[in-house]
Length: 305
Image (tube, rainbow, N blue to C red; front, side, top):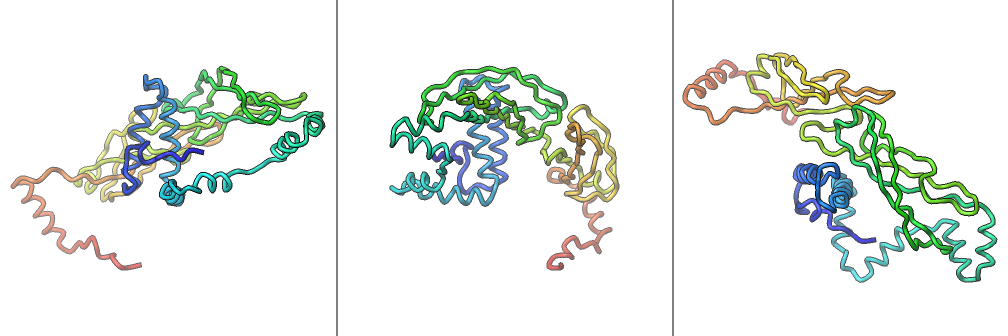
């Protein structure tokens, strides 16, 4: 198995923090999304990006990957990887047995029907597309196995499939019997569609809930106001209560992702944005506020449980 340079795929450095890596992933995922990009290898690049992000976003998996990458030039690296990762099924042992002792042993195994292999392909979906059922045309290749269980050719196949409304990232959809054919009358394997929702420039996905960063001026947070915020369907007017704090989450019920069984919410996460460097008049106003609130100590809880 080839060890890919996930940092190079995302265009980042091994020393970069998670925020930098996430930003790079979002930018490149939008660029190479198969429904947007015109490049011939967009789908392959999109899959590599998703694979790299799945590893690097998790601290433990990232640490394990970094260790593997550090020792990739070890002369025993490939052998160690192979022996560590490889596992054998009963069919693998039967194939080895038959190749050593002739077709008689293999023939006895083939008397019983053998189920075909399951296949798995990734389907990229925009967040807005989860609002309604989608019909997609997907193309994939069915591997053809020889008597020793090795792939000797591939047969292209195309299907029109329905992606239900409300799918979430990582959801698996089973297409029964669309995997590889069974042997000796055995059932076909299944095809599994793995949903990957492309990064959105405004919304983060948390299960069926959505989160959006809501920038507010200091006086908007202090005095309260009404602001227009986007949702997946339309813009709505949101009331900001007086004395709102940075990081506070304002819930908008029912504006998240919806499925047959669950409807998520939208959470607006407040971010206080300071104005540019103040002029003389603004400085005077800020000083008046500081004088009026001289007893306020924002760091009084430091060091306290």
